[in-house]
Image (cartoon, rainbow over all chains, first blue to last red; front, top):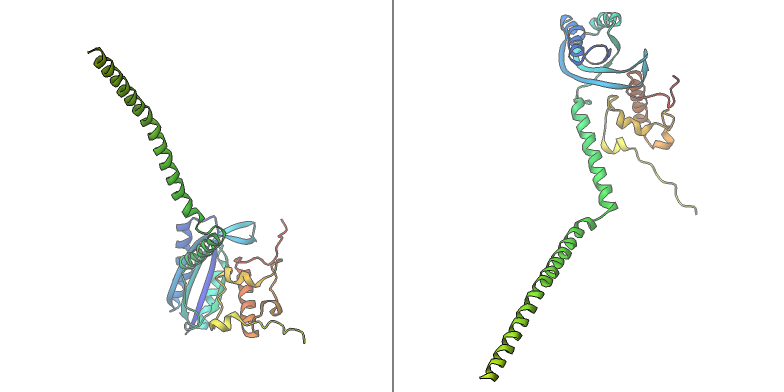
Length: 179
Length: 75
């Protein structure tokens, strides 16, 4: 018994679900029939090719790991070569200890997190902390404006009060003189 | 005396990697040239053991259309 890994590309004429079903019917069940053990399986989904294969630009990928006798693997290879919906497949021998199995979704999320960290560092270098200070200043300016407006509103009232006081004083004084 | 040339250290020896996977083309993309051919050991600074691993991984990735082998593909 030896450890192997298979990667297969399925035609893009099949849907996602149909491709996943095809992989399990064509590949995994054949391994099970030949007394093999499946240790890991991962359906990547649709993915673009780096170059055109038979005028196709994209296909769906599938990866699995299994244990099987090397003699039984030869018959599986010949059977897989006849399949029409299988575009390509690659079988490699694998050590369990040196190469841990990673899922494609986890790999993607790791790279996205790394890119985000890089972008954040770049942003921090380009414009450090100036943006955080600006809004505070704006608020203070606005407050001052408000105060100014209030003062301007209050000032005519005060003047009117003064005028009234003066008028009253005048009237009182006149009245006192008359008396 | 002229200054000593810069000594390159293998990145994989530093991290202690024993096997390079052909399934992550983003890692392998750092070891190819502008025209998508495999970069030599002189420029990457890898040790011979890991350079051979990378070369075999890139060749496997090219078979499964994860990586290109030419920059400009004919239509």
